[in-house]
Length: 492
Ligand SMILES: *[C@@H]1O[C@H](CO)[C@@H](O)[C@H](O)[C@H]1NC(C)=O
Image (cartoon, rainbow, N blue to C red; front, side, top):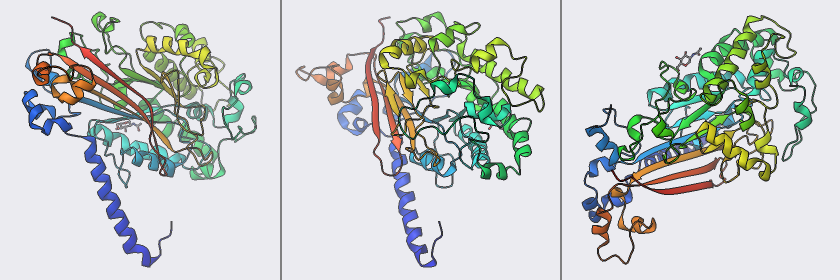
């Protein structure tokens, strides 16, 4: 945007106000619970200093003992932001990340311990391919340094580019028949070469050959293999000490992969103890699943070793496919290599996680039970995916079990600029005000001494999960779901 000289002071002022507002709104993210300041509740909260540590995770904890007490008296909060198909529009992506308060005006990470998940299809349809991959490359270590994470997933367009670039020729055979979009605009005609790849995009790489090289043996292909995954399961309680000890569940151990790529924490199946996996454990499903297309229970059942390690399996198959593409230098971009094993064919079919559209296209009576089944196998509450655009905005189906986050963000589509926000909060009831305790029906307004009653409650936790759609351009935040539970620690 060209700025006339006379407008400079005004622009500067606007910027100042903007930055001011911005830091104000950031402060809201780490709130001191309102009730903590009132004298009546500080009496109720025995360790007010700890009460204020919203979102912080103690590092001292190893196994049980004193450090657990820290966890039992403070509020744990985790925020997860997910962004769907970006398709070559860096400006839109930046607006979305700013709106979600993950980056500042210069694109630097300010999300702290938040987790950003991008569900693939960064590439094609728009010109900013290089700029977006570079941007995420610089953002990743910044997020990690702050204790947060950037979880990058591959979309079918990423894999198509690694398969050879001429995307349209390698659509799986049946997929176009089922490609009916829920809303306008209609898809472009199929089977046209370079349908997805713009001229500017090719030029930005210095030609077709260079572009191919970048996506295979070059810098983008290399990063796909190290820092991009097929699917991720992001738990709401991440470290061991996030779990209240009083529930006597042994927290699942996150996969022990070397640090360096933050998403590695979320792309393998956690080792889960039988006590954690018991249906009675309230935290068993406290997580969300992310993928580009969709994960159906039928596909999960078809996986080798499906019951034990579905997440690791899907990532293994996807990465083996990626690796095999490089083993056949310059192979014809007409589909999978002839030698591709059955599991890769299934993976790359319309039934697999990269292409499936069931959660978007089928009627709710067809899918809600199946979605629940998939959630059960993956141990999550939500199946979150892009791939099938919902131009009006993020769509929640089956009471939030299915969340469709591709909103046609790219200006190639002109859909809504959106991100999905999950805010998970776990607060000990000892930090509740009397008013809130009444609202949660923990005590009754008619109790003779509500304060005393509140103190006798013992270990009670309030869990809140808020799922929202965030939009730019002044569109209001939409609440897609809010779930609250009172968790009573079992008697010991
Ligand atoms: C993967 O991410 C890590 C951590 O941010 C970074 O150091 C590394 O260079 C990335 N790998 C590639 C191939 O870009």
